[in-house]
Amino acid sequence: MRLLFLTLILFIFDVWVTSQCTLNSSGISNVSKLSTSGNINIDNLIKAEKIKLEKFFNVSADIKITTGSNGIAIKTCSTCNGIIELGSHLLIQEYSLIGPKTKKSLGKYMIISIMAHEYAHIYQYRHPELKFRDAIVQEVHADMLAGWYMSQYLMNEYGVNSDDVRYKFHNANQVKIIDDIILDIGIGFGWLGDEQYWSPQHHGDHMTRAYAFMEVWRCMYGQPVQISCSNFSEWLKDSVWLAEMKVYYDSQH
Image (cartoon, rainbow, N blue to C red; front, side):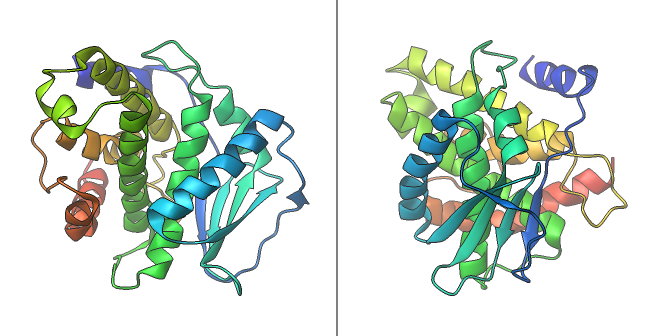
């Protein structure tokens, strides 16, 4: 039933989202910088979450709000580990989303998830031992790391632990709420996917991105997955391989 719901939402709804994340190793950006997203709540959310994300990923990044509809992770930064550019149109668009499962505002979680995806790229830049076959695998891998961050974020927000999530003996109602929110965010990431398999800018199709984001939660929830999620280090160990497998299956459909 969950798979059917996800599939229907991603493909029956006539949604075409042009916003994307773009890797940038040159340090050259063609967008204009803005002092605000145009929404004070978004601005405050970005400032607050920047601190948490940098602590989690153990990186430092310069965040800039720009014109346009893309998120960009730039490798070059003289005083930090990278620069993150967040397009104001992307931020406003995602902040307005309503979760198709929960029927509640999803904006806060989508903004944090997008930031987590970009911080995952900064983490990748800082860890050259993570070898990616191509940029598509790197994008799907960043979705997976964002999924880890958001799973932990929501567990903390709703006061549940890993045993609650796996066994549902305690706090089952809160776990169900998180499960629905994760599904909504996964669908949001799916909408950011594309079907342009021939394009060098292909980021993974709708289902690939949705499932990449939700993979770690499925593992924590007790569903069968192919790598361990006992802790972040264990998840990282085989995460690139899993991202490659997801992109491979993406290319076969």
